[in-house]
Amino acid sequence: MENRVPRTLIVAGGGAAGFFCAVNAARMNPHLRVIILEQSTKLLSKVKISGGGRCNVTHACFSVSQLCKKYPRGGPFLKKTFHQFNPRDTINWFGERKVHLKTEADGRMFPDTDDAQTIIDCLLREARKHDVEIRLQSRITSFSREADRFEIRLADHTVLLADDLVIACGGYPKASMFDWLRSSGHSIEPPVPSLFTFNTPGHPLTRLMGLSVADAVIKITGTKLEERGPILCTHWGLSGPGILRLSAWGARILAAQNWRFKIRINWLPDKHEESLREAIQQIRAQKGKQLVHHKNPFGLPARLWTLLLEMSEVPEACKWAELPARAQHLLILNCCSLELQITGKTTFKEEFVTAGGIHLAEVAPQTMMSRLIPNLYFAGEILDIDGITGGFNFQHAWTSGYIAATNIASSHVAPAIST
Image (cartoon, rainbow, N blue to C red):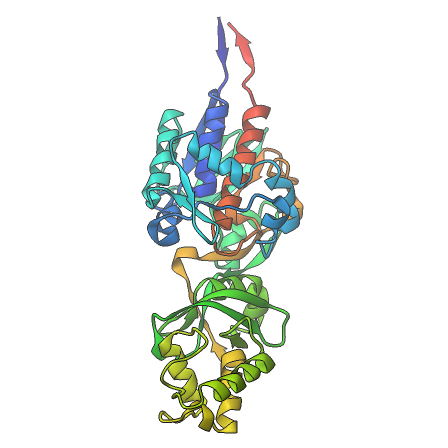
């Protein structure tokens, strides 16, 4: 008769990366005892709210080299992980479990139910199917490795033992919150916010709350940072994919400036100042008797056009042929190079991401194992990796969780003991 000595895997974090690691490790190695420790009372909370409650699972970007360009931090590391598990693998994994993903025009992928609960239910079913144990309100305060096992101490003074430990507890907004990991000898890249909106207190644009512009170019003055994409005007300033992506690429630079900086917006990204001047000259010649305020010829939203004319000091009764030189000059600048002073940021709660975390040089991308401590793994946002908005952060979570699970499951088959 043979018994198998069960090995224990503890996963710290009940989010996307932690859950994906736990269910896959349990599936691939039935002899593992797998426990998820979640410090809050909720599982998969970011999955629940992402994409307005629809869950932006991944992105239809199937070239690893192109995919890596969507991550302001971590690209070289991800080149090695995405060759092991990428968006196509994510699609197949969920598809095999009867969860089908659909692709939207911008490449974002959602469950065809348009409901994040579909993804949550799938992961919970996998956890039940493979006997993954879940413990809520279980926060790790410290851990140490003793005699080839981990001693894990919780906030309630419970001590757990594990053969493998995966840290997948998400990002922390404050450097001090990494102390329990720093004490294990790991280096931490200081955390700063990423994916946030820009505040423009008192600027007339805030009167356009709710207005969306489908295509614009935004530059941060004094830097090479530039993004093209949709902009949303809010009661506090500017949001939308174009702004969020720019905040991701500029996360560290903007934090160093205490989120006080200037941007320039080109509302007509296919034109520059000279080509717009030529277009206006044509309009003056061909439609000189029409009122400038009546209808804009450039496809801008009506409310935005009216505001740009107001800021350019164009009289309401002005005809194109009568447009004063100063007003025309201001209008060209406001359309192609509107300068705004940004004073502060606002967290975009659905997509909130922290840049910073475990230094990537201390983690092996082939396995997600620490290079400092055997059988210690990292997955998800706890690493110094973050992507722009569009499903890229979830893809990193699935990828890193899957790689850790694969390595744990294949490397630690329990030895047989004869009795």
